[in-house]
Amino acid sequence: MKVMFLKEVPANNARAGDVKEVVPGYARYLLREKLALVADDKIVAQVKERESATRRRTEKQLADARALHAKLKTLNMTVYAKTGDGGRLFGSVTNEQISQQLKREVGVDIDKRKIEVEPPIKSLGPHEVVIKLHTEVTATVKVVVVAQ
Image (cartoon, rainbow, N blue to C red; front, side):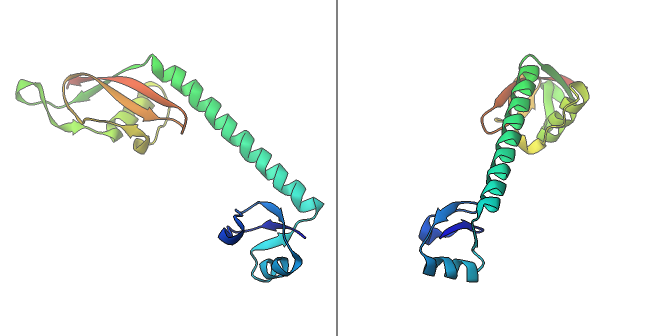
């Protein structure tokens, strides 16, 4: 009997959305516990449609990330910070400040958690910051810190 799994079932190595052939007794158990549905042609078509929609969405996100990477690749961003004696900053330049400056200069809203500042920026001058745009795409942006 063909069933479509609604939840992950480790005993059968099945994830949610998988369609597998199982013996009738096991199918009755899965149906009773609401772990699966009987997989008729209509349900299989719905699963395929959902998978293709998910695939299209991820391809669009990847294409958008690559386009944004091309835009950010040539960007030299300037961040203004308060300084003390000797050009040392009060604190450091944060991910939030870089995110806000990106929004002002490029018009792109990037989540501050996707911006990696390693090591922390605590001095004036040029620095490189890594931005994770997608699981497969990362951009390196040049950030120039200038005294306010």
